[in-house]
Length: 146
Length: 146
Length: 122
Length: 122
Ligand SMILES: Nc1ncnc2c1ncn2[C@@H]1O[C@H](COP(=O)(O)OP(=O)(O)O)[C@@H](O)[C@H]1O
Ligand SMILES: Nc1ncnc2c1ncn2[C@@H]1O[C@H](COP(=O)(O)OP(=O)(O)O)[C@@H](O)[C@H]1O
Image 1 (cartoon, each protein chain N blue to C red):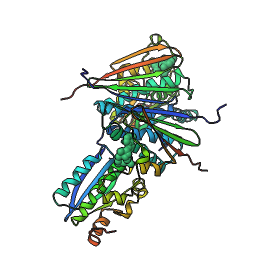
Image 2 (tube, helix red, strand yellow):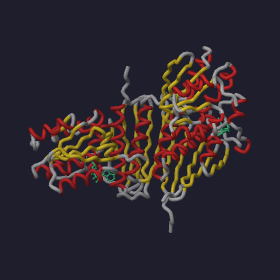
Image 3 (cartoon, rainbow over the protein chains, first blue to last red):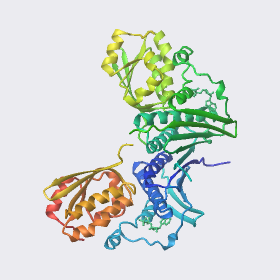
Image 4 (cartoon, each protein chain N blue to C red):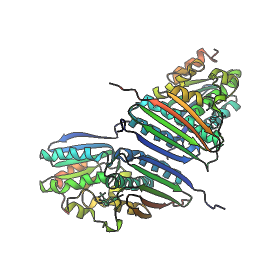
C-alpha cells in the first residue's frame, strides 16, 4: 500500500547553454507544483542550472550532440532532482570549496557552482562512472506552512 | 555522412491538465530554437496542447498516475512532434470533423481538437496499439525567410 | 506559481462583463464554465467576455463559448467577445468563430453592439 | 524568442552605467563579459551595473563580476552594483558578495558612492 504519491517529471535536451532557460522553466514549474514559494523556486532553479552548466561545460566540453537529462520527483516531503550525463566524469571529492574572496585574488571567474548547489539544497550526492553514467542527486525538503 | 544535424528534446509529465502549461512552454522554447516566429509558436503550442489534452482526458481518463511523453525533433527543414501514451487507444478514422456551427446546434462543447491539429500542422498521423503504445506524429515545415 | 487564470466581474446596466486573464486551457476552462453557468442560472444572459488579458486559448476554452451560446440566445441574451490580442484572435479565426460570435475591439464597442444587435442571428 | 538578455549603456560624467536586462547565465554571460572587457580596454574603469531589470543570475554571471574586479581596482576604478530585486539579491547574499562589492539600491546611490568611496577596499 503506497503511503505517499510521487509525481515524476523528466526532461532531456541537447547539451547546450541555450537550453538552460528551458531547464530552469521546467524546474520552476515542477517546484511550484511541489509547493515551493517564489524565493525557494529561484534557489532550485539555480542549483539545477549549476548542475547542468557543469555537465554542458565539463562533462561534455560543449559538444552539443550530447544529451543532458533531468528527472524531478516529488511527494509531500521532498523534491528529488537527478541530473544524468555519460560524459568524462570527475572526482567530486577532489574539488575543494574556495571562498569568493580567494577565487578573486587568484583571478578566477569560476569555482562557485558546486558550493552553490550545497548551499541551496539539503542533500547533494554524486555517483560517477566515467563515460557510462554520472549521476548527481539533489534533495530539497518541502517545509509545511500552516 | 549526416547532411542535417537534428536536435532532440523530450519531456514526460504526469497525466494531468495542470501540466499543459509546462508542455506548452516546452514546445514554445523548442519551436523558437527551430526558427518559428511568435504567430507560428502559438499554433504549435495549441496543436500539442490539443494532442496532450486528448491523452489526459480520453486515453487515460484523467488517471494522474499515468504519464504523457512528448518528443520534439528538429532540423533545418521541419519540426516533428511525437506524443506517446499507452492508454486505451481509439480509431482516428472513425472521428469525423464537424463544423463548429453543427457542434453548437448539437450542444456539444467539444470536437475541435483533432480538427485543430490538422489545421495547424502540415502532417498529423496516428499509430495506435491500444494499451501498448499509441503514437501521434505531427510535422510542421520550417519556412525559410530571407 | 502566479494564478494562471483569473476572472474579474463587473456590470454595465444589465450587461455582465467578465474580464478573463491568463490562459484558458483544459485546466482552467472548468472555472470559466462555472462562472458563466452561475450567471445564466441567475438569468443574466447579456454577457461580454473581455479577453484583453487573455494570453492563450485551446479548444477546451472555446468549448465554453460553444456550450452556452444556444441556451443564452434562446433566453434572449448573447455572448459578445472583446479585446482579443492578435495571437489569440488567430485561434478564433482559424475556426471561423467570427461567423458565429460578435467579436469586438473593446468593451465600449461590445456594449454598443448589444444596443444594436441584442442577439446575433446568422 | 524575445532577446533573453540585453545591455543598455549610458554615461554620467566619467562613470559608465550598464543596465542589464533579462537573465545572466552561462549562455548570456559571454556577452556581458565582452561588454565589460571593452570598457576596461578603453580605460573606463568606473562602472555601475544596474540590475533593476535583471531577472536571474547564475555563477557564470557572478563570475563576470569576479573576473574583472581586481584589475579594475588596480586601475583606480570599481564596479558598483545597483537595483537588485529581492529574488536576485538573495543569490548575491548567499555568497556574501556584499562583503566584496558595493551594492546600492539605485543608480543615484551608486553614483553617490563613487564620489564617497571611489574604490572599495576591504
Ligand atoms: N559534471 C561534471 N563533469 C566533469 N567535471 C565536473 C562536473 N562538475 C564539476 N566538475 C569539475 O569540478 C570543478 C568545479 O566545478 P564548479 O564548482 O561548478 O565550478 P566551475 O564550473 O565554475 O569551475 C569544475 O571546474 C570541473 O573540473
Ligand atoms: N489520444 C486519444 N485516445 C483515445 N481517444 C481519443 C484520443 N484522441 C481523441 N480521441 C477520441 O476522439 C474524439 C475527438 O477528439 P477531439 O477532436 O480532440 O475532440 P474532443 O476531445 O473535444 O472530444 C474524442 O472525443 C475521443 O473519443
